[in-house]
Image 1 (cartoon, helix red, strand yellow):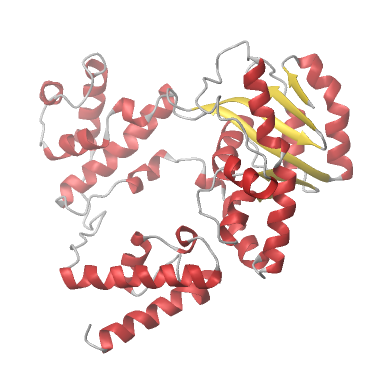
Image 2: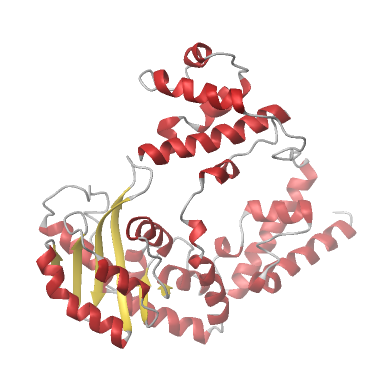
Length: 371
């Protein structure tokens, strides 16, 4: 049964059930609905909880005291079930200031057992239960009120089958002896730095190896300034300045605010106040002695061919172990392993045995044979 909780009094009535779950322990299915197009952080609109045969859609835009949800998400004896958990964890942490733990991610479990890494909730529900879920509200605006009956039904369905997926996923992981791999991967989800961006490290999103050293320091400083500006105004960073325009600004060697305005890297309205800020950052930026990004030379034709062979080997390992290829590694991971013979991802934990060492052995064999 589906319940819309849109008033504080309704959540107060629900509180004894949630408190009992916190006290006694158990399992709760969780999903969120949010909107992220116009704000820096995603705007949390709805939190859905599945408890037994009931689904509770809690309207956090209308209910302001959500302390019982914080307690529930923090309770170590309550297992929180998600599908594709990372975005939900991000918006919950940013809005309610709590990172749910412990969790079970049904998408991740399915990927470890051979499903596509991006298998959707509806697809997995149909595969496991045979039930086909409607997709009519998948692009709805969850900030609009009142919520329609169709929206509430759709939101409730998103947690209605999670416990079935959990039971199926857990059993598959045990049967395939992959529970340790899964648990090790899940531990990475509890790193809060994944979900909160420090403006001082925002430059790490960028790539500046092709720039001169002075331009690299400008790109670092301006990237960090952009992140701070976006956070302060609660807008997407691209609304301050897009990546391509940021590179244009860095390479233009501007000397004045007017030159920045004429360069056209900001919108017409925002340029009047952003250009002075950017110019101030440029004037204050000092060039250090060491590079920020090292230049990465493009792979030769033969090197690209070898990396493609490594990708085929990765695909074979994916089939051999029954694990989604994208979960094992990406083309970027492969090229990094080839270039450096090191990898923080492929040569760590369960991946080292499953893919890292076999791929290194494959490379050495190919190079030894003169291929």
